[in-house]
Image (tube, rainbow, N blue to C red; front, side, top):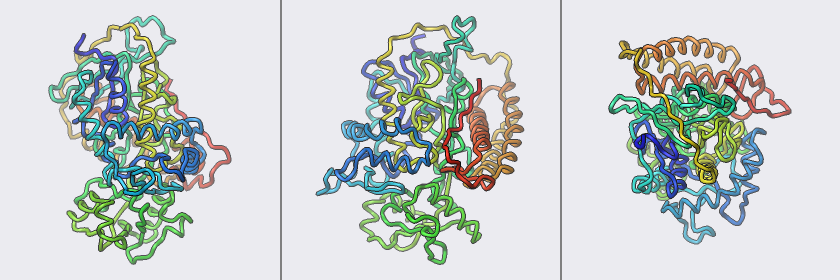
Length: 530
């Protein structure tokens, strides 16, 4: 049992999981499970930076106010205040770990702070235009060297092991999580991992859409597993579409950072006409939902495949120093951003809803936590403020660590092994890829930036048919990584559509042509399975 027992089992390998692991590892035996390599999480793709009140002309209260405005009435004020107040200390923790943020000689903080849509002041600390990568590389080096942290790469979680799955479990009213079934995809075997505490840190579900800025790993695994285990889910209708994903046939999901607009980038039609001021007085610095809808409107109005983001009026040295990765990647694709605008389209970017937790990451099940994009703590409301996502990962992971370290060890329970006695090898794997493609296409068409009740109902009917096929496949054949991801995507798509159908208004990221008004009282959409 020793090889399969851990004090803390972390499913997912992004900033939230890394932060938690490093804050626990001095006292706990930690295991990080990641379905590809440890470097493949979405956190490493983050370009812009981390929001924190670091300068004298800023304050946590201003940060809170900007977050509440972007959240369109659905942010939890207590949680938002807590995260904003903890932000400077969280940044200092990263600096102490060795993360090198971009410096600025003569500035009050010693670091360059940039601006992004929805922020009233410059408060985004960053590492060039590859902040996530810089943080990831620094923390991974520490994680790999730590003797108390075990990394299981190429392992994908199948399901959580809860008290309902334990024969003759004595306390039916005390629902608990004891670990998870994990598929070792390299050796094609299922492992039963036992843990005092299990943490879902698998990121979001943007891969449910055809166009996304996220890596292929963003398949909603943690949200789906938490839902199947009986956790409540909130606000899944609020999917943030990043306004500016590079539109190019050879560029897969390449994000053009929010900071490009923050530093003066202008959105234009093909004829060079600017259009954002017609949609919002803040123009290019409006929150993401407004900018994404404006671009969607202009594309549909004029029959366009894309619009253009122009920052060519800035000096080339400025562009190379502030956006080195964007500059070089665009140049590789034949786009010189110092001379010409960048073709962009909106793409699914961030899941604002998720598993309901408190500010320590605790879910409805004892010993089960959810942190990062997988969770819903009430910070983002109906629309996430730019660069609050990495901040949430840091602050809530550290809070979860404190909560876990304060607990007394629980008694162990013998877990049932995974049962493969009644399944066979799959006979038609093509079914999985076809269903995956169908799901992502109709989610993009029917559950995208602008929605109608009829479109949502069409999506719901197709989800029901897909679920029947996938459940039959799951019942009769051995599990595979592709099958597990498809199963999770269908569960997550169902949660998104059900949540969207329940919201009879337009608010934040959810815009319905049938309910275009905003109701006077903002309420969360909460789904309960049990």
